Every structure is written in C-alpha cells, then in structure tokens.
Length: 284
Image: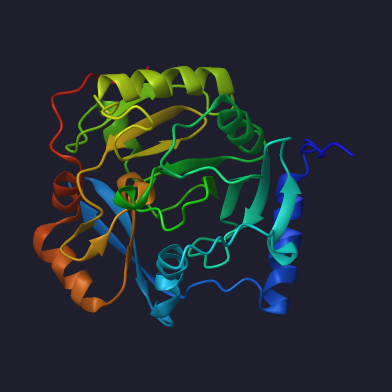
C-alpha cells in the first residue's frame, strides 16, 4: 500500500493529541527552561535558559557520535502524521518549544545535502496547516545534531515582542547586521520557496562543494525566508542554530547568560555568520 499523504486540516489536531499522549507515556521529554526577554537594538530576543536535565541537550550529539539514527526505525509514540510519499512528521522528543515538529525523510539522506523539491513540498504542506516558522540546519556547523535529513516547524510567535519572530522588523527594514539573504515569499508555495532557496545559495556563494553547499541555516514564514551562511557552530561556547538567527537562543547555564549580556546577542550571530553588507528594504 502506498504511503498516505497529510490530510489537510488535521496536522495541528494530530500534533496536540500526540503531544498529550507522548507526555503521559514519557516518550516526549521537553527541556524545562526559564524564558528571559533580552532586548538589544530594538530586537526582543527570546532567551531560554535550561532549568534542569541539561544532559538532554547532548543526547543528539551522542547519537551522532555513535552513528545512531533516532528516526529509524520510527518511534510510534512520537509519530504525528504521514506528510508525503517521501516524508513523515514526528514530535521533537527533547523539545524546548511546544508542538515542535520534525519533517523527516522516510529513508536516510544526509542532513548536509541540498534541500530537494520533495523537501519543499513536505514543508509547504505542513506550513499550510498553521502559522509557523519552518527551518533547516544544514549539518553540525549549522547546529544540527542528527545526520538524517529533517526540517523543523514551530508555531509562532516565538517571542514576547510585537512580531511573530523577533527579528522580523529588522528583517523587513533590511538592517540585520549578520550576513544573510532575505526575500519575500509565501512559505506555503513550495515551488516559490525552492526557487528563492537556490537564488540564496548562489548569491551567498555557498556552492563550494559538488555534493552539498557550505554550512548554512534557512528559515521561512508565510511571508518571507532567510538563508544564513555559517562560519562556526559555537561562539563563546554557545551553540547557535536557525532559531538563534530568528531571535530565539538556548543557553545551558547562567555563565552563558552572563557572556551573552557582556557581548550581546547580535555580536554572537555576526561572529557565527559574518557581518552583513548593506541590504535593501523588504517592506511593502
């Protein structure tokens, strides 16, 4: 029997029901955090400080080191829905944000490989279900902890500021200081997102290898998308992924919080991605 596809209008209900069940059974183990609003240069960063069981943050890297694959075989307790013939949707076992979903390839593909048409179709199908932030970490330098290709989706807003995503106002104004490419696009339009993605990869000079681009982060909403080249995964010991560049940072301890306060969040992001050239205004 051919794999089923996502039934429109069902993903949010399925995710909420599966989250409740997985929590009750102990299959879902969210990471407890203290949320701290950190305002810098008119960006209200959402900083989450790990409050307990910080060893969960290392689980993915341990699996990677021993070449374990947490997505195969599929954990039925975390399974949310079929998405397409090529992708399924799972709960993120060690989540920081509620209803954090993973859009995972059915068969193994490297996380550092280029995103494909089937990846974008799967992401778009899920983004049509609820207003969210879809993102991708292209390998360990970009903050990925698993080799098996997976995109991610979290509901918005992800911060306490006026925007759905903390960096949105600066993004629209074209004043984000870290290197990136940004474009207006409807995240529910797979072909449009894929087209802009390849434009970004080219414009940022990321195709320095035949098999895959250099490390980068990618995120999209229903209105715009951003691609960020990566120079390093950690800055001052703080691990940074796509969510960090959207304005949501995860810190392991108060020493990291103090380091963040000393240097500033934007300085961390600039050092991880490079400093931006002047950009155009993306507002209407």
